[in-house]
Image (tube, rainbow, N blue to C red; front, top):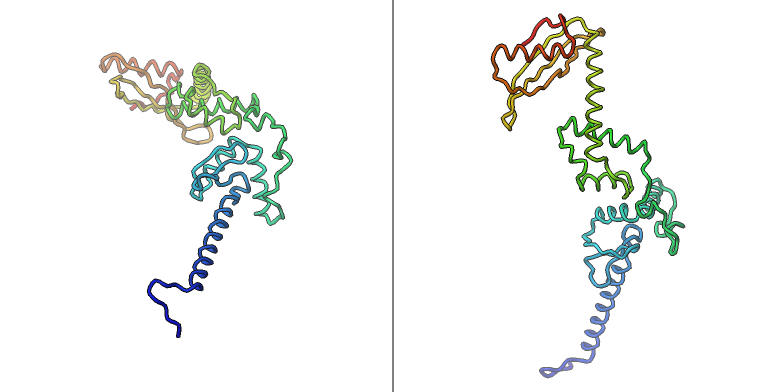
Length: 272
């Protein structure tokens, strides 16, 4: 039996310890290399060489915090590199359909040295028809939701619409345009209501005086009638500011004014 004095370590133990340390360092290097070369979103992002908690966009070198969630990375890819994002989406969809596709292979448009198109840098054109439909939708939203007309010039809304249209050059309609379109929309709806009222035989009215938060008094009036197809219709006929005392005479004059404005004549059978 071999005995060792205190402090003595066999050469085999030293060699074994050195081998284990060497293997451990080798595994660490392989792990770091694997992490640094790992492709995220099919090569659109790679781990930063100096900070493994961050990833770098391979198209613009911008870095992002990365915790294994790709939502913010996809957002950057979609808004800053739309051509690469579309190519990525097509390849992912192809794989989901079971088609063979090498996701790491760059497309012709994303090859190094290829010229960017106007669409790549946010200059996609919004057609006149598309712009008109956006203006119409904004007008209806502002009117029905009681939003301030000045919201059309809000920077956040502008960025939202530019993202939705895919064009960084799109400019939302000005408040003047929205105001003009709201007035036009009111005239169109007023004409449509007048036409339906003209065709009915009798109308029931409901009225209510109310006061706003700014202590302004209003009279609201709603007309109700049954159209020729026996469908009940209800329309707001007026919501007028009232600056006078609510005496019987003033209330009568106020209601009569709205009735005459819509040419209801003798069609009113009840007013509550």
